[in-house]
Length: 241
Image 1: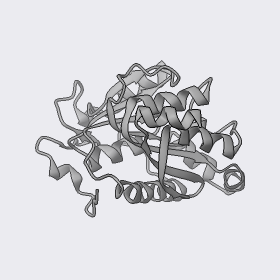
Image 2 (image 1 turned 30 degrees about the vertical axis):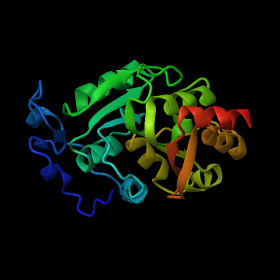
Image 3 (image 1 turned 180 degrees about the vertical axis):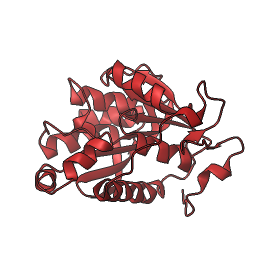
């Protein structure tokens, strides 16, 4: 799916930017003009956003049918990411899920009504099997969860085809954290500081039980995997082998 122009709001009738600069496709309960303007982002924040968004564009080249339903895990925290996807794919129905009900409520209050909000544990998503054409789980290991293996299996269950999955690179993250402004920038973007990371082999081995890796990219300071979820019968064969 090639999206060379990023003026995507004009592609879909009825979807536009509100006066607050955020995507709107229906009447808001509260006028956009009454919502506070977002603070100016630092150079680090802009650099991290640009790196991630360019990576998304490259990964989306592997998507041959425009997604109609999208799940963004942690999207209530990472609103820059969610708003970028909303503009990039204005016709899609977008769900944002987070295990923290207070984070979900705050996101509802702060942004325009372009999304469906869900608070639920990542290990037990309240969605149907194969409900989403595209699932995005950025900086996955920093999201609140009790069982990362179960959470990955849930991502695969609710995703029909495309799973965008990224994790931090511990050494680069540690180095970047020593640089002035980096930690403040990731916090401003709603990106949590990862506290743990399973061995890379275990993580990738578990991910590939459920999905085939099509593209691997390394935007600072993450590793990104664009994957295609395996059919259920193939997943069972993989787990048995």
